Image 1 (cartoon, rainbow, N blue to C red):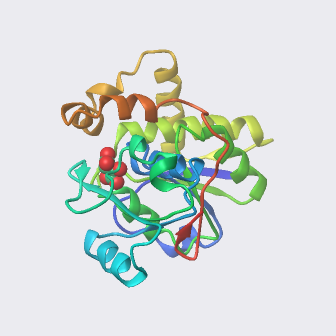
Image 2: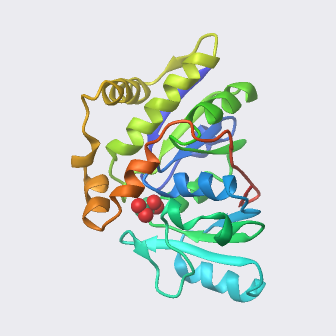
Image 3: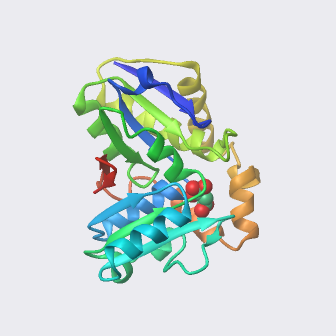
Length: 236
Ligand code: MLT
């Protein structure tokens, strides 16, 4: 089995996707929020790339039991029901509901890997569970870090490293690309308290926006066994 980590820059060649189990990671905060929404009973989540599409879908489907969620610049999109904070995805807000979600990087990365054999949603919150499911599927694993507008995000790399570390606990043997090895080293350093992610670009922006609690929450490991999966454009 092979485990590669790739930074999302807008396009992923089809030959990287067709036979792989893809794990999308946008630890701050889209994939953490998705994991938390499904854990809190959201029936389905439809990720869309732009807010206009989300609104059009909402109008087409009608208001009942639908939630519009998403951010631009880290804050709730005007007119949307909730933002992209995992704290927004409470049982009250999402249980038994269809969530239509648009975020700057996370939902774009998810939409870009639709053609993969299997697409799982990964985060620190479900680190072990997502790694276990991916190993059980038995295909090569491609961890896509959503990053920040094409740039590598250390927070995503650290979470990807956490998943690589978890894969190593379930897989008999595997090979990894250099990005996966770097991610695993970053995660190990972070575990030892040697890597302060709060100074990194997106993490520090969330702190400035008043979302320090979100960032701390998103880095809690193994809070749930839920492994959301994208099938035909719908996460459940
Ligand atoms: C994104 O998709 O870019 C993020 O999840 C941004 C955020 O809300 O922190």
